[in-house]
Amino acid sequence: MSATDKIRRRLRRSFAYSLARGAQLHLRNLRSNTRALPNFIVIGAHKAGTSSFYKNLTTHPQIWPAWTKEVHYFDQSEPPPLSWYRAHFPPERELSAHGAITGEASPSYCLFPNLPALVHQCIPRCKIIMLLRNPVTRAYSAHQYNLRGGMIDLSFEDWIERDFTRLDGRIVDQGIFEEFMSVPSALEYVPTALLRGVYVEQLKFWHAVIPQDQMLVLNSTDYFADPPAILRSVATDFLGLDDHQFEYRKTRTEARSYPKINEAAAHRLEEFYRPYNEKLTTYLGRDFGW
Image 1 (cartoon, rainbow, N blue to C red):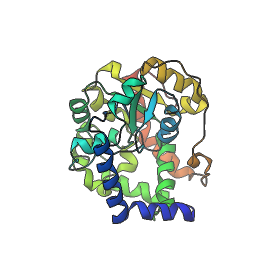
Image 2 (cartoon, one colour; image 1 turned 180 degrees about the vertical axis):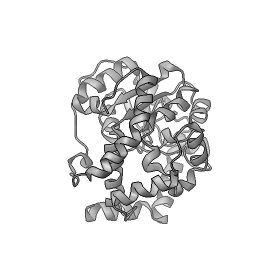
Image 3 (cartoon, rainbow, N blue to C red; image 1 turned 90 degrees about the vertical axis):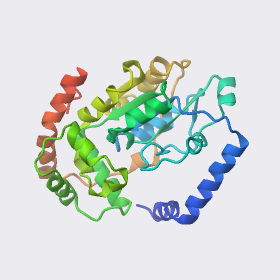
Image 4 (cartoon, rainbow, N blue to C red; image 1 turned 60 degrees about the horizontal axis):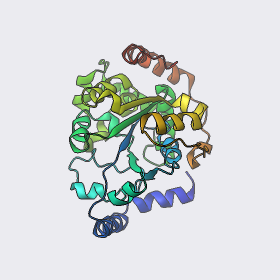
């Protein structure tokens, strides 16, 4: 992580930063008390390309971005008033005048079993998008991200070993997610390095609540292979917007390189995820090639 990134992260964690953001949100609501709720939410997965996808998707002239990409409203243990959430989005009147929509991307939303009902109750017509990435490379990318951000000081091998110990050989099913993810504030004790890559169980929670035509599952490999084509399809076919020729723009983090993953650790994760990937293929009727 660069010195600039470290300073930026420290500032974002400071009390003064939180106070300033709170004041800005209050002012945004004062300027317009009829702000929209999102038309779409990108719910994950973490380190599956959500930043690139959201940044590029919101270059469509009819998609107005949220004040910040990751609002993290629904995954708070005690969510603020709905007005706090609305303050992150453009006024309804302006969106309507331009035939535009808005949305956010909080890649931890997919993890919590209670979130689909909360989202659907609050925004029943909201469309849901989830990007899936090879769970082994996703886990390694997450470790590198956390390591550079100073959030962990463990090697990749020790990091996943800690989660294997926490999981204690149990099969990951919906009961495991409900057990571990019932308290959002206790994530530091949850084997998220492993759970985040078990996509099939996460999707089941969302599909149980969200209508099929309101949810889209993408393979991040397909997205990065041809970003303009995927973005165009999402915007027109799924979000119902006018056709638009996207020009792909790399995010700052895409230029970063990582040391090569330890082969033994990669193999261990491949074996762990194999049955869950097979379940995912059967469940969605799509082979993601992992």
